[in-house]
Amino acid sequence: MTVAELAEKVEQKQAVICVIGLGYVGLPVACMFAEAGFRVIGLRRDREKAEMINRGLCPIEGKEPGLAELVAKVVAQGRLRATTDYRACEEAQVILIATETPVEPDTHKPVYSALRTALRDLGPHLAEGSMVIIESTIAPRTMELIVRPELEQASHKRANQDFYLVHCPERVMPGKLLHNIRKLNRVVGGMSPEAAELAVKLYRHIVEGDLDPVDCLTAEIVKTAENAYRDVQIAFANELALICEDMGANVWQVRELVNKSPYRNVHLPGAGVGGHCIPKDSWLLIAWGSERLRARLMPTARAVNDDMPYHMADLVGEALGEAGVPLQGARVAVLGYAYLENSDDTRNTPTEPLVRRLRELGARPVIHDPYVREFNIPLEEALTGADCLALMVRHEQYLGLDFSQVKSWMRTAVIVDGRNAFAPPEGFIYRGVGRARWL
Image (cartoon, rainbow, N blue to C red; front, side, top):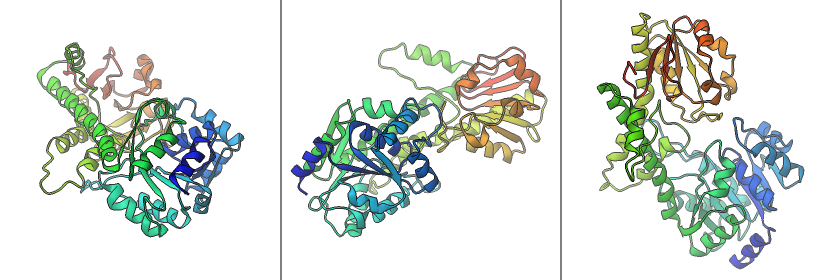
């Protein structure tokens, strides 16, 4: 199939689309193309989740406006079906890959096992003249060094001749999946200019924002750089919070006043940075730089942000000490395990290192999260007999707490607020990130 022939199929919505990976990225993308009029096949290794989707049920929990309804709608219309069988790819002219790309915890090098597996499994079933789009966030040079050779070897076909290769990184976040796909601008990196323009024609069916055709390397750098930028900005806010704590000021007042100055936008400090992208994309951006590259700012920002859950543990110990309660043996009710408010997404959650550190220090953490099934226990059960409430996530359920009721449940009235969710309630010993102990 020629570029012109595939472009015609795309424009007429006659191309079959296969989406490999039906998670936070792949599922909403699949649903939106199905809603636009394409026939879409979704591949998911988890058979139970695939069958759930085929029943019109959304496996993503948390507050995700419109997604559950859209899954039910496009499945009922027969435009989306899920499978675990890669032979379904033989029907498709467009294949989107949305797999996770974590980094090694010690070396910070990218882990491409899921991406490599998807490419190898796709290869034998890749139809001539198809377009393959990588939506996953990947390190610069991955398209050239890994994606192209893996897919060429697995398919026995040549990129730019037998198939077209594109990197169009997603810009989604939990709670705004459909909105971000529809409204935000996208960078579209092609292994050839023709491939980029072809992908622009495809995404125009679901994206209202700008679609900027570039080469693959530029697209890879743009996506990792935008998240690295945010990581550095958050690190500045977190370090400013630590300075305010140390000197006796309130970072929230300082932040408000700094941001009144033109061109200033101090980000929100807090108990740590989580999610699939921000904690790793700085490492992806610099992963394959040459020996001449001596990156200093981004690794330092990562260290600052990674340390915030441990700072939370220090605040818990300080507050309990003021109450005369030793940390060892203390029951700590940790509120929030997802990395983001009103979401069930726990990827790289900063709550995990906090809980680990508290256990190392001999405390007894009890986790509560209304969106994470494993920790969706009654709030009263988590708080009863607790010596400290440690707030890690601004779930809306926590913002309206009745502190007289909370105090009646707890054994010791201590609060450590990692997200500036509460004004210091009367009758509690209170610590907050970025607040002097008496504020």
